[in-house]
Length: 327
Length: 307
Image 1: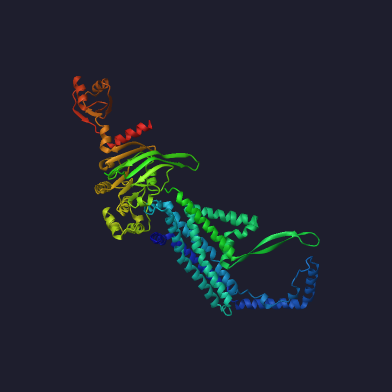
Image 2: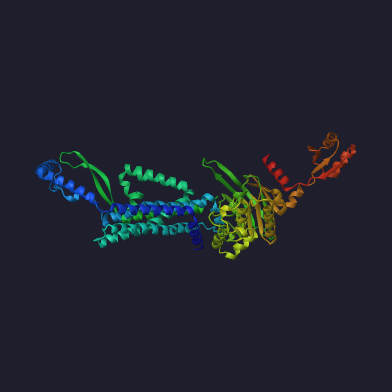
């Protein structure tokens, strides 16, 4: 516990970490602003413009609608897929088609909370990395090891400090973001009728977001134990992002559920979907057709994969740090 | 001095590999024996393996081969109990720049389970009591060295290891460190000091080990080491330098000019030099035995190994 106390004191003394935390709050503010801006009800001018456009379209439909529906049904009948539905019965204009879209709290409100997850991931990871790498870069770790020669407790205390150290910043950032989104939707009168299930989803998303920060900080700290320089860790992370999350994900779409970005999204949002192109002969005429098949990545699977990745990083960091020379 | 040496190594070896997989032998078969109590100088040219050896003693670097006993504990198994009684500064003192000197020591004290009162005591001991609350990043190099030495004293160590402790210190600071090392030794502690300031070390060290290219080339009491090589160099001033040089060379001694003097190597004594000159009708104005210092011994040994 003494080591952990010391490491936490060091963690909070790092100016860079405070700067990074402020950056996280700025991102929180931007998410809240975006939620407020996008949840604004349409202005009177926008409503009037939509009404005018709607009336024009309705007039046009009254004059030509019968023919338009007939043409639509004709095209539908020519489609090789017997189940094809061109929506010919819904061609009559409605006013809501032309009004600016107003997001719902249950949908966009909850989702916008999740948008801060990547910022938390990066900021907390950087905090953990910088905290440990700075000691290697400065050589302070040598001095420290003469006082605390047992390397496993040293590593554990530093990872523990990274885990606990980012918590206040992450709690504050998630709190500001969640509170801000609620206030934004409330100020526009969009919270009436929000179901208990929607509130529960919002709460659960917030709690899962809180877990992202400390885990990312531990992963960042473990990488720093392995690579010893913040720049090296950033290089590896960028390389991973480009090669695995970008190139390989595009070339081999079945890898999508094993990407960090999709796993974090699935974890925070309680599951997500991804599409894989599936080509095959389905049409009666024997021609090849392709379609995107939607798959679900469950929250539990995503959580286990992320947790497994962090455990592997920590174990490798432990094995390396125990044996490596410290100069 | 007790029987059990404070530091004992046998066949210690460490090889580093560069990125190109080229092997560099830093320490090769080092047998080191640092007796308990007193100041022991650990000398060697740059790259001789001194710092690597110290790092191996402190468990920071894993030896490829060899044995280490530190305060009676065999490493690496006994590293933790041994280091409870060791204070060490390795190369540049590194502390946390955003903390004051006192806060840095407080962190170490908390980790080591040392009472806070000890922090103020050691700051006072190294002359930093008045600057303890300044941030470390504002410290001069000399102040950093003092803080590092203060850190070594926190745990009341039996063994203090100082790697180049006078780097960056002004003459007064060097004198203070010398006094501190002496007082620590007088309290019964062992001080291992690695330094390039040979004149400083000579004034304070009781015993010495000299390493060159990772291996021990000499060890023993400083007085013995100097004594082994004393009486061989005589400095003489005469009017007839050319004639005198010729006379002395005829006896088989080595003679070289040094300003207005002749320096004679290989003569059994100053009296013999004087006798030879007088026998040729040359009388010396000045005749002195050049006492070899640690620097001369060090340079001789390192030259011998190099050749």
